[in-house]
Image 1 (cartoon, rainbow, N blue to C red):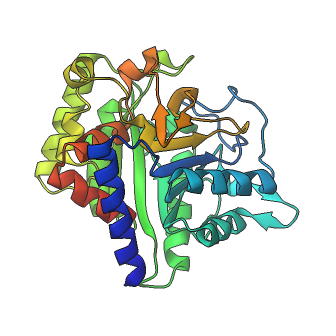
Image 2 (spheres, helix red, strand yellow):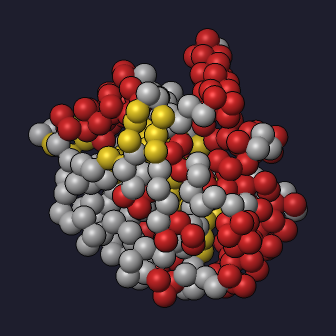
Length: 324
């Protein structure tokens, strides 16, 4: 109980400083520990861009301490495929344990679920699922959805009842899978294993531009997601956050103005913000310069963070449910 209260107090103080005193200190860290992967997904922004990196444990520990000192209290571990990481008998559980020892409130793992991950001791789990059946396979390769289903079930069966981490599936909607959105929503609602789904739009990283939805298609997808949300489907995105993902909102507001909330550390050790933008910490403030890619951002957290700073109650509630 004291631990949860401490988290609420920290979040309240962080919000007041950020919202009213322009104190730009990150709240969460996305740590890429490797770019090694067992898939070659069509929309990937990591594979073949940074190339062949597998972080040393000592460097990871240094990055965790650096992130904590910046103010970050929530850790998301990603790859590549993060469950592939190992070093001299260590595995991802050693990173999770170290993060908790340093003081992070929670650790989330993002996996493609192509191998057994039931042994990983995360606080919450994100599984990359870009539709179901053929839609998922069109993005990630033949047979990937069947393996995903098998390993999610194995994870669920291995966790004691009452101690299962929350399982969120993360869908990136693009031109290959947009027609499968409704079917995916039904699948998630009826799944005994999945708690909720997060909806993102494809962000046009270099070499993946053809997957980007047109503004018209993006609006249609968001309209449909909001309809599902109103009908009680288990969608992680808040209504307020979804509304801030429409092209007209992005075009009329300062693009990326809140992206400093998340600190990124890439497989090659570079520290920065999304799309490789580096923050400069000076007297507790982080400078940020958006890029052209930001104008077509599809990450749902950009809309969610904008809603947090507008004190939208539904977004605040969604954030508490997700993180605490």
